[in-house]
Figure 1 (cartoon, one colour):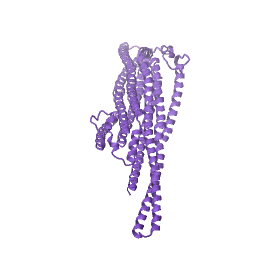
Figure 2 (cartoon, chains in turn brown, orange):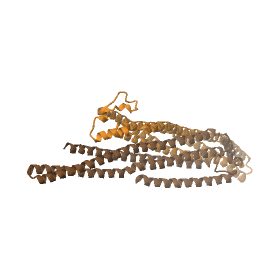
Figure 3 (spheres, one colour):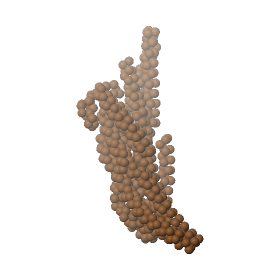
Figure 4 (cartoon, rainbow over the protein chains, first blue to last red):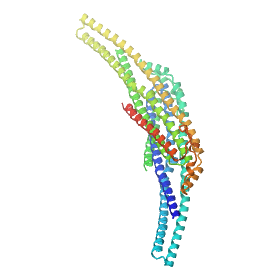
Length: 285
Length: 285
């Protein structure tokens, strides 16, 4: 009977292992999904800031215009990295945790089967005990019942052993998967942060180099009605964007550039919205 | 009359300058506040993950327990930096932009005064014109009206000049303030990202060094009912936390540690909630 008790405690350890994994991995999954959603929202807010910076740049004098555009481009780059972060968190962190749901369900079904087998062993043992008490002289029936107990015990022993190996494999997979998932989380975060440091370093330089003096000269000229001076300065002089290969001067060039930017912005916004919708679906599944 | 027209167009440039600043700086302020709020929410989600990691660590075998605790501590450190980021964004980015509200209101009041002065000039001019038409021979009244026009013109000229200087100063301050505010934004973000790279590098190493073998030995022993072995291993061997100066072994030590961590976590959570509430108020003002 002590073997039966030992098997029973083994099953309890197995059940606890699976229940604990189910509870905590499920919580990790939903918490990391929430973290990822909030990160996507930071990206969205920054995307709006990028758009606003670009709109504002178009109302400013050339030096500030170029500075703001360059800053907006850098800010947009960081959001691209954040978008990559969000996508990679979904693929390498949230999805593997989600897969545990099915894995745990399957393991739980195996434990249930084992419990049936153990129940049968106990039933056979009880039957044998009753027979021995009621008809101690009925050797044949007792012998048959003993065979049934032996068969049921062998079955229980075999199944417990098999399931033990399965649960050990389950635990091992859980440990190495968690190691992998959290390592991936850290790596994904590190990539974002490292890239952001790189991009913001360049943005900082651009902002540092801005000198308001020439813009103020333009502003004075405009205020005192000396139009023309402002547009005489070639725009490309201070525009660092590689998207402007030709030399632009004057108002019409400014309008052209503005149209171009707006289109870019709209495409970006549209795809960002699409992303969010797609993402919202994925995360709420 | 062309002087009057020129003054009129100057006022229009002034008004446009202030209106443009009001519109865009206001939008920057609310967008950066939204960005900051979302960042605070990312911090909150990560704080929950820290708590969950600590709770889960307490249910795991020693090696994984130590690994998860170390990872949770690193993740918490990054949130401390994020909290600093949020506070600095409020102080150095959002607050200066908020201050523009009052500044713009004041400048707008000055422009209104100037418009009154200009209106008076036009009124005096009209009066003089009417007099000349109606009573061209009334030299005395015409002369008085001429003096009034001269006085109103001098007043308008003086006020326009003064306001011109004020608007120029306004524009200059706007340009240098934006340069400073965006530079500060970039610096604050850079500090967070650089610190996060540092902390996550160490977290990555901890996770890489985790070896599930010893935990699996413990698990096997537990499953086969060989209790005692698991708790015989000193916990401090793999615990990198400086918060545990004494040597801890066995179940009671684990419970003590758990209690200690919980308290820390609760304090942290409570203050985080308080922060958010405080922040929510500040940002919605």
